[in-house]
Length: 376
Image (cartoon, rainbow, N blue to C red; front, side, top):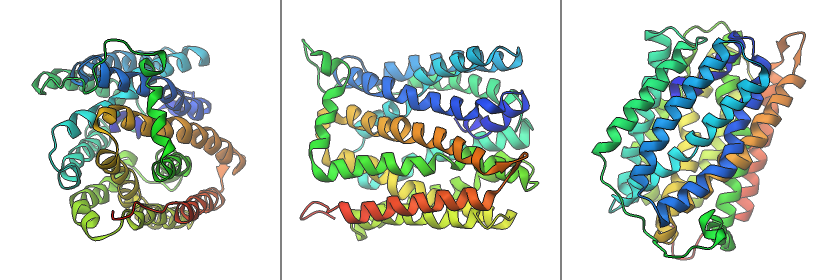
């Protein structure tokens, strides 16, 4: 995932499709409205999540290769976007399905999930290093073709996973259950609703991180951009390894708030517009991401009925990558264009806007989240 998602903006720009970047990013958000809940319902009620992961990995490999081919051949904007959308539809459910498989094997998720999730971060970092330091492909389709091959490796490794059985098998399912829309009942609980809505709102400014940090670092003359951005994953791994201890000592509300507050501070550093400050801000990304979103995944496993395990993770993904990222990618693209004059981006103004938006989300959560009585 890191081999394609991190250099994506620069790759599209290098192949004359830079104007499509906000729309390409939005394809993942559109897919998140359709695919994760449906696939999550299949995993809970009908089909082993292990089998779903296997075939989704194969489909992602094939469609990513097609997307790269569309850029290499100079296809029309419409065809390039169509290929990107098809790829997004099969790739977006993978994350929530993988999480449901992991959680099904854990006895104490609060203690066990952080270190396991850190393995995914190491993989993301390795992808960035391969792109920058081995393939030298920060703006080349070589990164995409290599990522496509790695998806085939994921498919092969899926045969080593246990075949997890669906947890809520039903002979007859309503149309609402087939689509996974019964997961929306989770939102009736006040705290669950606040956590989910904040995940969507927080994803709006967070969507600016990868595409526009890469562009900013390029403007500041940084080479090996993908490797530089992997600084974000160093703090992510550190936070995941410490997360069990943090959750044991602090109320969930303060852990959630700390993540959003750090993101506010990080974007403020980016607004200072120097290599050093932007790289320092990038290195704080792991704290900003993990303390809210990984904690949210553990929160769902701890406080949502197990029969809704895959659907609750899918609903989180829908609100993050669907609602939040769709607004974030399109709104961020508009805001970037607004801050760009004659090809020169006013990065101070751009990141200041993102800082104010993140601060508003932080204040909103602080006011609305109460926390369950008797729970941290």
